[in-house]
Amino acid sequence: MPITNPLLNTIRSLAGSLYADLVALRRDLHRHPDLSGQEARTAFRLANTLSSLGLDLHMGLDGRGLWADLVTDPARPTVALRVDTDALPIHELNRVPYRSTVPGVMHACGHDVHAAIGVGVAALLSQMRADLPGNVRIIFQPEEEEITGAVRMLRAGALANPTPQAIFGLHVAPLPVGQIDWTDGLFLAGFEHYLVNITPEKGYYRPPAYLDAVARRCCHAILRLNRWHLPETWPEMQAFWSLMHQGDKGLKKFTVYDASLNDEDPDAWHGQFGLGIKAADAHLRIAALGRVRAALNPVCLGTHTRFSLEPMGAMIDMRNNPHLVRSTLPALEKALGAEHVCHFSAAFPFNCEDFAYYTKRVPGAMYWLGGANPAQGKYALLHTPDFDVDERCIEAGTIAMAALLFSSLTAVAQPSARSV
Ligand SMILES: [Zn+2]
Image (cartoon, rainbow, N blue to C red; front, side, top):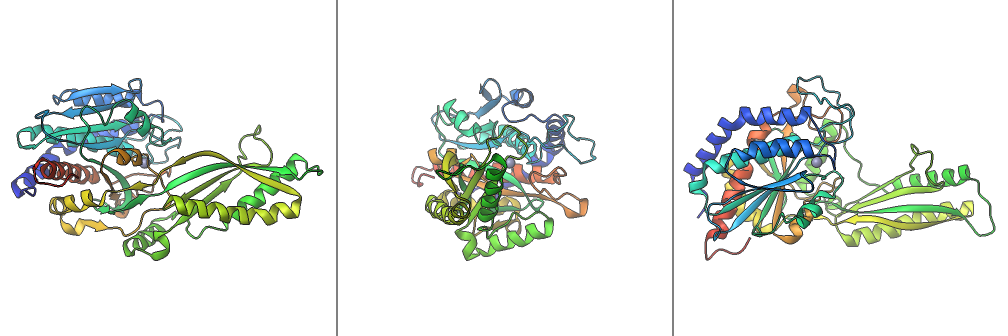
């Protein structure tokens, strides 16, 4: 049974009536951003708002993470929405009334918007409780920027008692406000981090400054391997989205290399640098390591040094569940208008997401939510000091996520339906 027009009308109308409160909430979170690991104020603010909705609240991670359960009948299936809540160590340059009041800390990745959407969906669905064919869990996750929050929330039980049958997520993006972009496969890269140590060849002495100079040459050699570069302006970004829409062949199997010396730390070990490899899958990351070695060998040979790679951490790539995406797409298109729902044939190669860990446990899907409005000077370029969104994306995101949760719940609630 697809989601009906009267239900969609109710979703749209409730999202409209909640809009002013959600904007106020987003602005409050924006004024008071919390860095990863310090989200107590944010979680308290969200819990306060959610507690008036009659939901079951569960706090975790020392009061920094929470999830809210909207239970209509414990015997029926549950689906989940995850939003993230932390801010970044960036000093805000925007001159807006809701500017960050914390010097050097800013919601420059839109997690304040995501959190407001999470509350919006909770508020909206709690008013549609009688129509819901199951239960909904909204997860408010801290520490996404450190990619440690998802695993900690999972350990705290965010996908237990009951285990949801599907999970959704979203992220604002420099796309036109109100647009949703989806993939039915790879959504974001996985990565591997290494510490590269340059040491003198046996029998040679190399002073610290020399080792640093070799390390710098090695970084340049690695960066030259890049075919893709992070778009930094609105036109560059739009050109890149266009490649993703077309499913550019090279982009489908991307690898992105990052290499840099820690110049800011005077105590850093000489001849060391960080290496990051992002790629569409684990096989490509293995191949990329081979290319890195081939790039470093001539530099080290010519300077009588050698290199070693020390693994420093890795993260899985984030893949959307194709059946979940396809089965809920009609509801999404109906909710927002098909012209506002666009298909990406490739993943964005420059970012990672710890939402990946939820999708390893249950079928999941994440979506890009357009938040930009160039006419208003709001470009939604992530991790920049003038990041801001057209707040109408909060309404669109609330409608989209509510429709997806409704649709997936309707699908899993039918006895004959395939599990999503
Ligand atoms: Zn983010």
